Figure 1: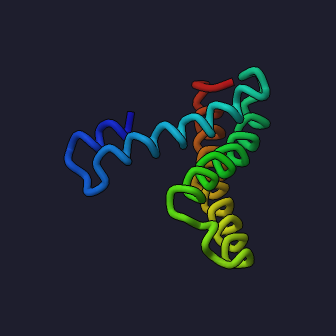
Figure 2: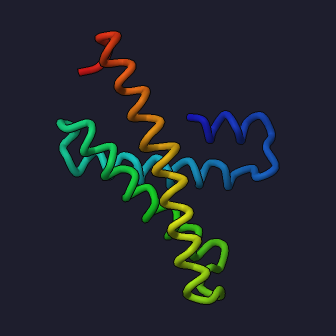
Length: 106
């Protein structure tokens, strides 16, 4: 949804926002689907890994990362994972715990 809104308000990336939104959303959903949506914390960690694989894989071909030296590409992958781990793992975990305290999540 955020990608559609970002595209609609006229971002500099246009339709590629929508493609990125689909890639990121698919990566996240695959992680949760691996647990059958029954174990939210395990699904969260899986979604961090699958989001990294899907989005980095897409960008690997889209941005021609294959032309970079292997060690540089591996460094990008590690940074990519750490970023997703912080923003889609740790921060979401904190929000989840807050919702649990408020009795809005199981």
